[in-house]
Image 1 (tube, one colour):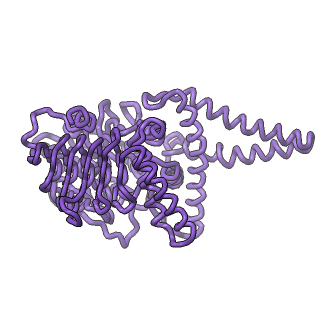
Image 2: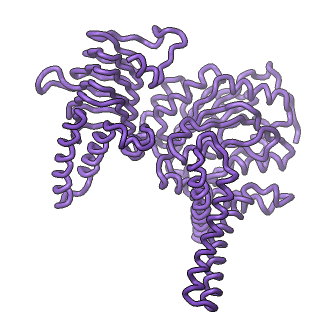
Length: 538
């Protein structure tokens, strides 16, 4: 290894690479958080079908569109971004990689660069990645705990990290054949060349996992099992010590608590059933499950997280134990691919925000046991049921359930005074605070993550006339009226009792009768635009 000190005269601003696929609003937040933090800013898109490319270009990013005819991996995307940075600015000494579903903490890039200036032997540095909504689901909380690692010299960093160009180029960048674990594998090669890896104290990025279902989490664990075994088998032959091999303990643990536990349980069952018959079999099964649950209990006792209530820690432990089976399934898939001579294919567990389950996205915005405390959720549940039934193939059951839907709709409409039929198009993540006197025309289109409050009306101005189109993440204050063939832009706010008869641009606020538009630059300095503040004001 040879090191050259980076000086502020060499280049004070690192190149920035963001990778993503169908990140939409999350990508917009990510790129905005990088404004004035470095240049050039490169976005690498991997076959998005949403507006990600347009968003990136509108925010001044240089866009690289990967050829999706070739196998995709995050490693390939990062390498492509690295190459574009060097093409745009050949003298760049540092390059920072970010995932498109992360928002960068203000001041982090400068902090990381200052650290690299002080440590000439550092090949990479990262900080604390945090989950945006760890309370949103236990799976999000598990991801937040996964990112938590001690500061100081480390063996690996994650997807968000600042790399020294000299070191990165010396080892040839990321291994594009890997579908997961590409960062630890790269760090393994960097350490072998004499470089050092560091984690420093302080928040680096806020990550938006959006894992709200067991299925998503299970697929993520399968991908982790596949990638960890792939990296383990590549690094083991050249490692100086078994402790240096990435994922060695993870691979071993998955094998012990899946196949190893199963074989051990079968052995105990056969042994005890031979001596004591059915009683022995039952006792053996009880003992085997007792061992498994004891390990789960041990994990629960060791677990601490501010985002996990005590009663959820055992659930976390059970999921951790079940995750060993998902990782083992990833191992099996890896061996099958090797046997067939098949290249690894990315295992995706998270699509775009619009591709997630609408009902689960709605439910994620409500507190626990909301069905008993927030009647507005009844109306959303009936609506999603109607949409689900309409998407099914025609037949007798669909016809019968359609009649059930209309009966449920009339009952809930009468009880809650919330009226929007299944003909209305509403994106995932709808939240209604309070309820009563809410009417939405059946031809209205509402985007993802929108918020309604009591008394809201969205409809036409004349019988049969055009109706509004509401984009993503729009918030309505109480008794707001939005009427006619207008468009409410993404992230807009509609003030309480406002009557909106004209288009509202994205991220603007409409207040008054008739409503006037307040642009972001007109808002008071330091004003908050959070949902809770909007509710308090409107």
